[in-house]
Each structure stands twice: as structure tokens, then as C-alpha cells.
Length: 392
Image (tube, rainbow, N blue to C red):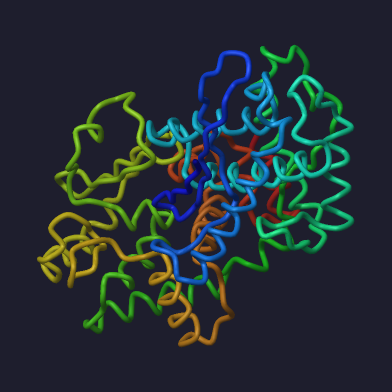
């Protein structure tokens, strides 16, 4: 007897029971199908899920998958690992985005190992299996859950796969007594400064966008997304930190040190400080310069009792896509090229580090744990580097 079930995120999982020939006990097997659909799925998507279920039913009838030791095979270990990762997400120790990538990467790796090596025992896996997986991705691409062959993947995607696989195999070191990834090089993801600057409004473009937003607000009739965009340019916060910003804390965990949740943010009573917890880093940001703007919003949008930049019609936060579309409209009205919304954070860091020369303070304001992270966002010419070095 088998079944499939869907998580809120839209991912589907397969579940079945097999009999252990040694004890006679029924053992439950669960793992990701590696497919994500709408929730609930459309009739066409449902047919695809049912097809995958039939394929897995046929697969689990094979003798080698019901022999003793199934729990030590790579597929079973991946299932156990993902269950642990889900608990971490629930406790706030891991982001849901990381979990989604884990499910995608490990699902692909599990299908590859099953197709090419019949789901081997975890102790038999070596770096040669990893290199074979990489070669398959670069040469032919990976098979989808429907069995279709994908396109060859880029070096950047391969690096992403390897980083997540490395984390998985590192968790197995106490059990398998070896580090499969010990001698496997992995390229670090890093956007070149030239490419990063092409995606960031700097100099006159930054000032033009800033002036346009102030002008729109002064003319009246603006909705919260306009205030949000200007606040991003004034604080350098991440978009989601302000999307979910509250006037005051509404949950107990927001007031207790050491309690982990994915993220939260709220204002102090005097509207002069932002208290933020994001990516397991807690910080306080002074926003005295935002107080007139926040006071105006409180009077203008009384229905937003919980969220500062909420939708006045519903009181709930806007979607990320709503803010992105609004930025696109504003940029077009300024005759500026399209920039991603996160570029406002890039521009803030670049502008204020160049003007102040204080990487440490700016890094602490925007939530960076090291100065290397702050330096990653910078647009600093050689002359400015020389001028900064003379201060030491």
C-alpha cells in the first residue's frame, strides 16, 4: 500500500511500507518525489503525480530494495536527513529556502544513484560517484521526475549541487568514518564587481531615484509600497525585513533572547529604532531619520494596525512581487534601467561606505557578520582605496 502527500510548499512526497525479511516487521519508507505543483494541484499536475506514484510502486517491488540494510542505503539516509532539516526549519535554525534547495538537490542525486548504481549502501559511496554525478550533469543534464532528460547544467549550478551534497555527507562522517568530499574542489559563488555594479543604481541614478520617491510622497496619494522603497534606500535593510515590519511585537519569542525563529522585525515605541532578527542575527538599527515618514504613515493608513507597510485593504503584508513591480514602474518613470529590488541595499552600502569610510559600522547596521560581506557590495575605485588605506 502506498500513498503520496503534499506539503504546504507544494512539494510532493511518496510513502510506502515494505516487509523486513529478517524480522517480518513492516517498515515505512518516505522520500521526496522531487516535484512541486500548485496547492491544490491542477488535474494535469495530479495526473503527473499519479504517474510518479505508479513508477515508484513498481520500483519498490524490486527485491534489492526490500532486503535487510535498506535503512543504510543512500535513499533512506537522504530521507532521514531531510526530516532533520525540516525540524530545523520549524525551530528557526534553517531557512525554508535552504530546505527547498536541499530537497531539489538531494532528490536529483538520489534518482541518479538509483538509476546508475541501484541505490548503493552509504558506506560504498566514494568521490568517484560524486565525479560521475558531476560529469552526468555537465554532459547530459539530469533526468526529471518524469524521466525526461534535462539540459546540461552550468558550472555555477554544479557548484550549488556540490555545496549541498557536501553538507549532507559531512553529517554522515561519524557513521561512515570518512569524508567523501575531502579532496573535491568546489568553486565559491561570487558575483564579479563589474557585474554587480551593472545591477546597482549608483551616483546620479541613485540620487534621481531617491528624489523621485520623495517627490511622489510629498505630492500625496501614495500607497505603502512607495514608502517602503524610500525606507529601503534610507536604511539598507533587506526587503523582507521591512515587508514584515510591525509597529510593535505581537509574539512572545520576539522579546526573548536566544529564541530562534526564521525572522521578525518591529519598531520601538518611540519609532526611533528597528529591532530585527534575520538569518540568525539580531540587531538594532537607529531610524530617527525615518520618524517623520513613519508618523505620517501611521496617520494616513490607520487600518495597518500590525504591519507598518501592510496593505491598507487587508492589513496583511504585501507580496514581494508587488514591491518589485512597483519599483519597475518608478524606474521607468525616471527613465532609468531596470534594477532588481535588492540593488537598493547594494546602493545604500556602497554610497555610505564611500562617504564615511567606516566599513565596520555600516556592516553592523545592515546585519553583516564580517567586513568581508560588506566589501562584497562595494563600488570602490582605486583612488578611494588608496585614500582609505592612508587613514590606517
